[in-house]
Image (tube, rainbow, N blue to C red; front, top):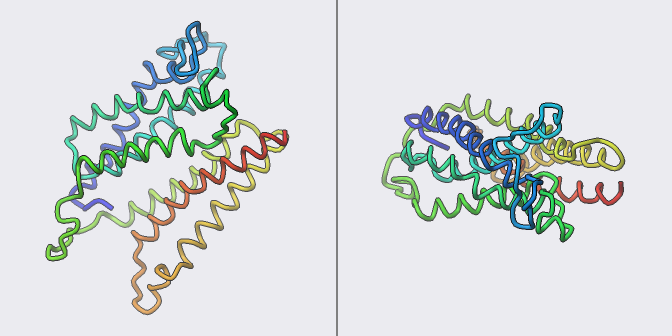
Length: 258
């Protein structure tokens, strides 16, 4: 949760994530991830640089936009770990080059001749190619930068938090987007893939509600009347990430049942 004085800054960085990571993914990230030209091997793809393909190959463009969302998601995971501790110009550079940390694992898992794909690895919703890669990069960034100033100083007055209205709005946008994001990762509803859709929808709604609102810590608001909104919304978003792994397992079962 950022402070109110840095709220605009972090929202600008969210836009930077899409702009700069999307630019680098267009230039070379998509080609290194899903290129199929001569030279493509188990480590990297070759081709599709600048996403230059005939216009009639619409499937390539649709794949590009979907995978660009995945690549920028890995970038935003790291941005949360570095919140309020990075220079804006340095963050622009990071957003641009962050594609290099995601495009190769992406190729290993989903690309033609990918190392892990050839071994039979199935990652439907990006639990390893996106969240594991982004989480590892975020951990490295947090270790290098250290905690925010005064974060663990009990004698220092905590600054005013950001707008809870924006926190709620962002959580609802994530919640709704996750329904289509994870289910859409199956690229279809034929055969057993409908099982993936139903399982993700069910767990995403019911499990998130149960964990967020029924844990002892969440019920502590009853005597104090303090809803602790920021804590609850953070619990929701953590559940979304956990369910990416659930989606991958369900999708794997559906894949083998097709």
